[in-house]
Length: 214
Ligand SMILES: O=C(CO)COP(=O)(O)O
Ligand SMILES: [Zn+2]
Image (cartoon, rainbow, N blue to C red; front, side):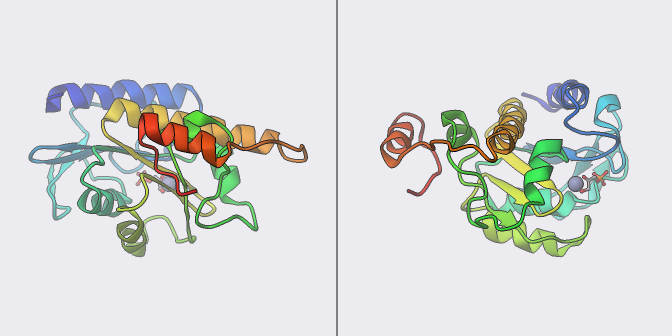
């Protein structure tokens, strides 16, 4: 997709996320990689009302080339792009169920959600917890740089998810999948439930190349 089309996709899918209630208020931010830099949503923008011409364009040093002032989290997007070549797009949300899970105590920090469904394993994979930092704290960039080579998605403690993918549309779908998984996980609380066993995960790995260590 060229830059013009990607700007339109940011507007269209930003509205989809907002309409689904996955990015309340002005929370969250989106970005996509281009040949000559990358695009991100302006800081304090509502995802339901993005303007294609105002979207911020940055270079690989984080300098603004054009558009409005970028997201205050631009540096963790940059850290992901620099440390994960396969990441072509990034979605960061404060979606309710994912953010609720990010607040739970006693999580396995290396993999906070169990493999309850195949689509979670396929689209997200193992999801580590990044210790809490203030939004906009540049040290989040170091945390993301360290984990980015190993994980396509991360959960910021007491905040929300960062999801990356091979193109923008599939990254948005993966973020939606994560939200549904978090919802299922919380619905299952207090119930006895099965998780996918090693054989099932191996089968998914064979067919879809999942990122899950048994
Ligand atoms: O989600 C957010 C902070 O974590 C939103 O910040 P921005 O509006 O600066 O993108
Ligand atoms: Zn946020």
